[in-house]
Length: 251
Ligand code: NDP
Image (cartoon, rainbow, N blue to C red; front, side):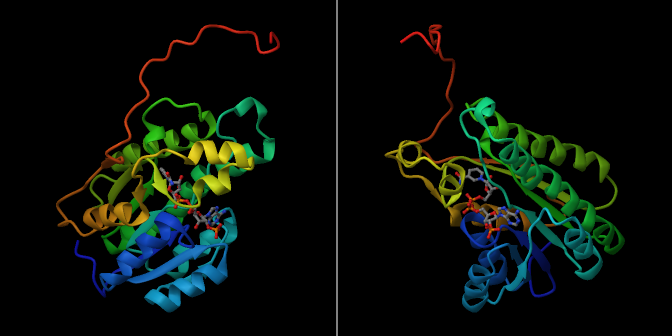
């Protein structure tokens, strides 16, 4: 399905990082692009630069999300809004952080899909792109975030089954480390933030992921790219770890 001036796209989390780059890339192909996020000032700058249409939206706002399906003929939904609070230890997490992360990354993504799918099915065309993570696929000490992205992974695969015969495509994109504001939002402690973000390797940039999204959505209609895993060349998997038991209170 070529992306052109007849295409309408909605990108959530378009005020920074991967979402912003994807909104720009879709716009550059000629699509009408609704760029959704909470920070309207960022979206307005994006609109000025690229011609995207700003949409001030908290994806957890149930009524606003429901309306989107009724108001906009969305051909491409990029479910990208997400965050990773409480990285490192779910047992120390604030309940609010757990709820916010699950709601933003999973429930809201599902409700966004629920909102746009009826129109897509009626029009006989549509593409859902879910922004996952390699942490959906491999173990890491990020149980809360990994669980939410794991849910998106299963959601994407099962949706392919639910949508058989409709012509609607579903793609799951699982990036490794990408330079963005993700870790600034995720981690409050400056020392921990510096430690986590200092990789000494060449990390992916948001445009790398945007290019991959364009490849998927612009592919001929017969092609459904179900799952993409994209890592920096210098990032790989953790493997087994052997860590001797040590009581936390025994110093
Ligand atoms: P950023 O923090 O730069 O972008 C996150 C975006 O999500 C922002 O535009 C933010 O906008 C939006 N967002 C967060 N909460 C809400 C909300 N309640 N309603 C609407 N928008 C919201 O990070 P990235 O670009 O890196 O992250 C984009 C996606 O990519 C996320 O799903 C993330 O999990 C995933 N990812 C990132 C990786 C990385 O290494 N950076 C690796 C793998 C996956 P605003 O605050 O204005 O609402």
